[in-house]
Length: 223
Image 1 (spheres, helix red, strand yellow):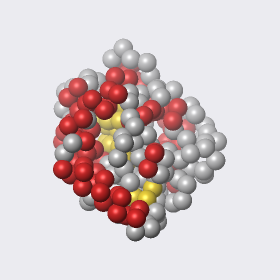
Image 2 (tube, helix red, strand yellow; image 1 turned 30 degrees about the horizontal axis):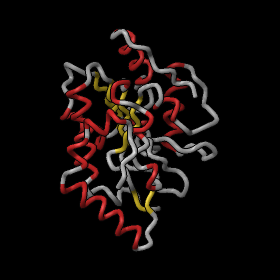
Image 3 (cartoon, helix red, strand yellow; image 1 turned 135 degrees about the vertical axis):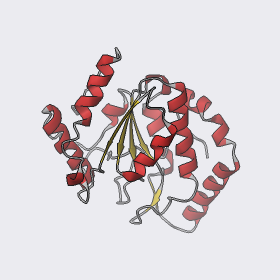
């Protein structure tokens, strides 16, 4: 697999790309495709999170579970969909919280690339999924890779905001020193859990307050 990502990420993760588990992961994905199975996102978009947000510019991590499993939805950024694709329910709830928190009204797009370009790493714990089968690639090796990504960020960066929504994302907190970074936890924005603590979490204003306090440019959440 020719991994097209920012040079900084390629250097920071070089060791991972040479490990046996990663070779097995790539082989597994090839087998899935050869068997005629649909894998999302398309191969050239799997690593998009690392294409739009260089490590040196990273300020915020938004951790999702796995890519959207509907046709045309996933494009390598957690919670994001390409232009022209209706925002899925979790993203609709994220927009509701943003509107409540900082007064930005619902945008007309579900494409979150403008956030990524400002230093928001939109990372899923698993980077691929089978069509219409959520969590189908949970155990093929992506967890090892994304654990390594979190460790790189936690060790090489300072004062990063980690937005951990739901138990799945919060498990990654074990790799982050809360004295070096800000960990904000809430329920997942899914319709199944958003009313259990995601709504009202005010993570978007808290993120910007933290960044400003650390002398960094806040995120413009307007799309």
